[in-house]
Image 1 (tube, rainbow, N blue to C red):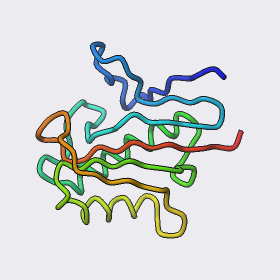
Image 2: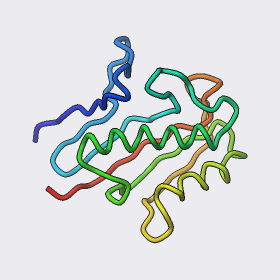
Image 3: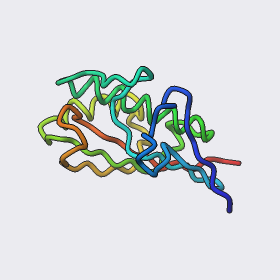
Image 4: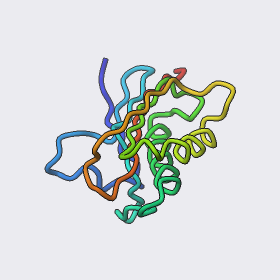
Length: 132
């Protein structure tokens, strides 16, 4: 089954040429995102010190990649969320709920982890399955 690389225009600067990964991939009915952080289309980290703002931008990036592969929030099966501090859980969770709702949210794992840069507070990746 051939793999398609997903790279939405809003994330055209990712990844850096030094990093051998794709923002997202699709094969058959499955769509995967790489871990996304809160960079906007101008390559600026949004929401310094504000995990809610960073989560909103991070989810916007995740959704852009999913859309490039033909998927939306309702197609997401699983998300992994990485927080730089578990004390940010409630704020992240509120933003996550705003996107995925209460009725059929995806499976999710949330862990505390050191992220690539100290200003990054949240990173999220997703796996979706679409109808073809």
